[in-house]
Length: 246
Image (cartoon, rainbow, N blue to C red; front, side, top):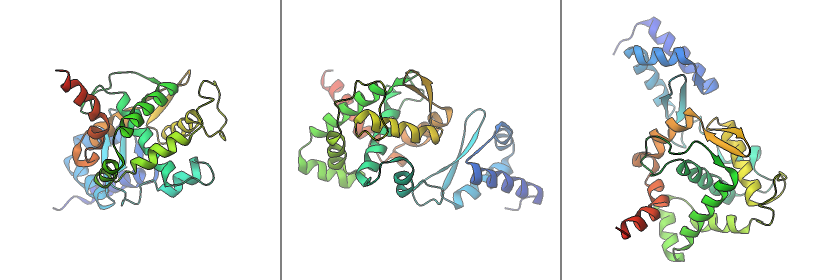
C-alpha cells in the first residue's frame, strides 16, 4: 500500500521518539487513534523490531513483544544495574517471578480487566510470594522438572533462591541494600519496576500500578498467547481449590 510521503515521515518521527524514549505524549495517542495511515505505518515499524504499540488515555508506549527485540531489557543488564555482585540467573528468575506475583496480587482472577485493589505494601508482596512458593513446593521434584520444561522457568531454583534468603530482619523498617533478605530483594525488584515506569511509590512502603502497567498486563499477561499459561498456572491453585469446594 502506498502512503503519502508526509504521513510516512510523521509516522517515522513518532517511531524514532518511541525508539529513543519508549513513550510519547497524548498528541501521539490522538494521532494514532484518528489516522488509519499513521496507525498502520507505526504498527509496521514497531513490528519490524518485534515490538507492539500500546496506549493509555494520555501516553503511547512501544513495548518489546519477545526477547528477540533489540529493545528488550537483557538479563545481564538487569544484573549489572540492580542485583548484587555475583548475581546468577536464579536471581533473575526470582525477579521475574516476584513481578508476576505482584501483578497478580492486584487482580482477583488472572483474566480480570481491571485491578481490584489500589495498592500493596512491600511486606504483603513478600507474603504473597511465600504463598506461591509454598504452592510450588507442593509439587514433587519430578513434577517440577516437567513444569520447568513446559514454562521455561526453573521453579526449583526459584524456590531455592527464595528460601536461602535471610528472613530474620523482615520486620525491620529499613533494609540495607547489601542485606540479603527477602524484603531487601523485593525492594530491589521494586526499584527496577519503578525505573521501568510500571509501578509507582505512594509512601509508607506502598506501591501502585501505573497506567502503563495496567495496559501491559491486559495486553500480555492476561492473554495466553503471550503468557503461555504461566499466570493461570501460578494462580490456578486457588481456582482449583475453589472448584473443589463447590
